[in-house]
Image (tube, rainbow, N blue to C red; front, side, top):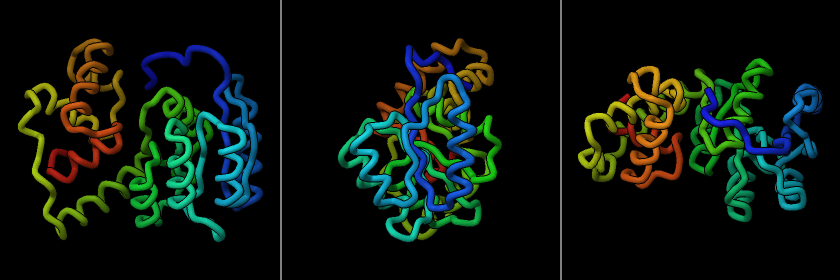
Length: 223
């Protein structure tokens, strides 16, 4: 699902979770991968913010629910200081409000805590390369919340009319969670062409990333 390899060096990862066994086990499994370096573990949100500032990791795995400082608040604080950091939320699938909140705070991806380790690794690699990642269940949660919010609130004027027919097709596939290679296969085009289409869609909609573009599409009934 990744279109281009990371140029060089390990992906530096910070794991933030208040469940000691889960955090330590996840860090150990990730550290065994040749291209991933777990630079630190944090047992709470405040420690996560401090370590992110000190260590400047590439990717942070962030628990949504923590007692001292929750994931959305920690995410917002970290990105306010380090906008280039990529944060992937770790969620309990029943926590709809928490998933929606961490999305609004700027997370670039979501993983259910029962995701197999290979899925976690793919998400980290995608995040490090600037791509979004939603696990299937997390995607259902996020977009279900968006649809409910859309019923209650009239969305702002749409920029959909600025998109070509092919760009609309690309936006629908983004909303389904497809990455560039999958979009290319679905539309019968090259991965490079798919990547160019995605870039134009984001630019025309004024959206910073794929997750936000997908939310925009769902709010307008394009998923």
